Amino acid sequence: MSNKHIVKYYPVDNADTSLIKLSDNTTIQVDCQIREGEENSDGVKIYDVKKDILKELQNDGNNNPYVDLFILSHPHKDHCAGFEKNYYCGDPDEYSEDNRENNEIMIGELWLTQMVFGNDICDEAKAIRKEAKRRRKLFEENPLEANKQGNRLHIIGYTKDDGVINGLSYIPGTTINTINGKYNYYASIFIHAPFKSDLVSETANEDHNATSIVFQISFKTSVGGEIKSRAIFGGDADHYIWEKVKSISEDKGNEDKLKWNLFLAPHHCSWSFFNDRPYEDNKDPKDYSLELLDYKEKNAHVIASSIKIKNEKPNPPHHPAKTEYINKVGDAYFRNTAINVDEKAPEPLKFEISDGGTKLLKVAGAAGPVIVEKKTPRAG
Image (tube, rainbow, N blue to C red; front, top):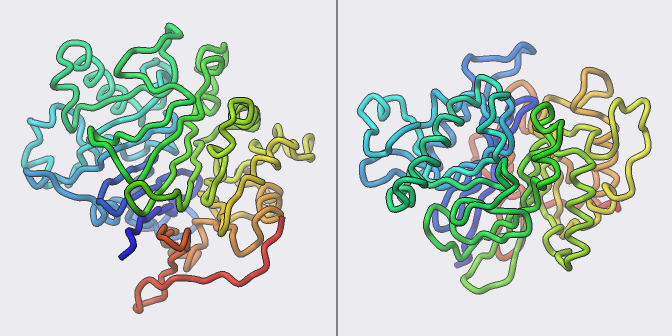
C-alpha cells in the first residue's frame, strides 16, 4: 500500500497558514493565522484553524499536542497572528495543566530568520522572539538540552554578523533531511533564501518581505524511492528575490530545486511576484518570473492564500497576477483559499501526495473527501 502525504492550505484571508503531514505522522507548519470570532468583516465564516490542526497533530508521552517543525517565513502579523495564545512557549518540562487545557501546541523545532531577533517587529511576533531567544540561549549554554523536542532551533540564513553558527544555521543551498531530531525518509527541504545581501541591506528592517524564507520541499512515498511531488513556499518574497532564486539555482545546476507541483503564490497573490507595484505603472511581468513558473510539473497547482480575488482594489490579491498564473497552469489548477467549497464558509485546500502524484481532495458535503480528477485542458 502506498504511503500518502497531505498538504493543507487554510482559508485565512490575506494571510498564510499551511500544514504538511507526512505518512509517518511528521508534521510541518508554515506560518500561522489563528483568529477569534465567528465571521470576518465581510461576513465570511472564520474557519477554526486551531481545531483542525489539533486533529492532525500527535501527542507526546505526556499527552501534549505538538508540531514537529514550525517555520516562520517572516515576522509579519499576517504570518504569526495567534501564536502567543495557541503555541506553547517556554521549557517543555514546565508544560502545565493550564497549558494543556488551553490546547497549547508544543513546537518540536522552530525555524526563523535573524530578523526575528530585531526590535522592529510587530507585536504578534514578540512571543516568537522571546521563545527564539530562550532556545538560542539554551543552544549556547546547554547544547544537549537544546537538542531535545521543544527546544530545537535553527536560524535560516546568515546572522546579523554575516556569519554562520555551526549547528544552528541553515543557509541557502542547503538540503535538510532531519526534522525534529529525526532523519526523515519521505521529505527533504531545500533552502533557497533569504540571501545574505537581503538580510544585511539597509531596507531589511523596513521590508521583512525581502527576508522571507523561501524553500522547496520534496516528497517520496517509499524509502529510497523517487520524488513524487514538490511544493514551494516563499512567504512574501518579491520578484527581485525570485530572480536570484532562479538564477543561482540554474548557475549551480540545481534546476530540480525549482520544480514544483504546488506553488503558494507569494504575498497572497500579489503582483510583486511579477514586477514592481503599483501594477498600473508596471504592467509587464518579468521574464524570469514567468520562466520560474515554467518549472511546473504534472498536475501543478497554484494556491492563492488570500481573500476572494476581484478585479478591483485594495491589493493584494491582484487580479492580473491571478491571470498570469492561470495562463501557466490553467483555470482549474488555480485555487483561491477564500472560495474553496463555499465562499461564505471556506474550507482548507487539501492535497494528497501518493505514488500517483499530487491530487486535490475536495470536501463533498457529508460524503467526506473525494479525489477530484481534473480533465480540463492545461494551458502553458
